[in-house]
Image 1 (cartoon, rainbow, N blue to C red):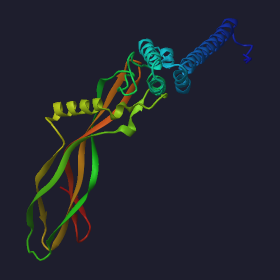
Image 2: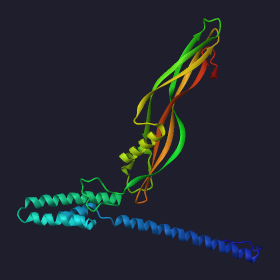
Image 3: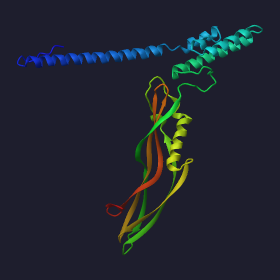
Image 4: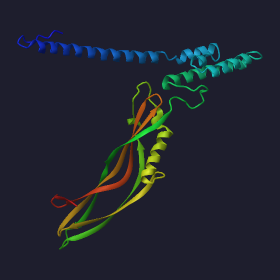
Length: 290
């Protein structure tokens, strides 16, 4: 792109201008090339992973061959030896070994594509080794409120000749609990949706933090008892409006694995039940906050 500079500018300023343009163009080109290169490398790594169908077919042709091609050399060799030994006296056992090896190779190859890692002696009935996940840190987000609803009490003093003062005892049962927001979890990888957000590790970590901060052992019900005083003038009626709300303590639980992937899991804890109160004049509709 050619830029026409005014002829009145000094020559050194023109040279500086052109040099800056050339430098910017070189930088943008270099960054773009690097991004393209990294993207191509990531794609090559993903395409290099074996196909579960191809690995399964290899194990069908020769028991243990699929495991060998996935890097499970000892396990593949064992299946291959068992298949050969079983084929000597009987035909039926070798069919079982081959079908077993084919199914195992297919399942383990799917795990390799999803998690990027398999164990040397990992069979299909084992819990997936995958990447090892652990809690990296907890990021506090502060307190928030969750509106629950409105409860209205009527206090009638229309027949009274003087003000009346009512003391009310507010009682309400509530449940102290925590919520792990699985559906709002965010991950740094797009290749798979990790089930780590619903794992027992996340649950245990949240319970440990909850227990440490709130002396909590399990979700339990509690009773809120609070006194409210309301004064109503003579020849009037009033509504006491209670706007119930939960007080939430919010965190983000950051979980990572040895592949450098991170999952951010939102967690909030119901720490308290509370309410805002307001008195409404039932006659004229005027309101005042207590």
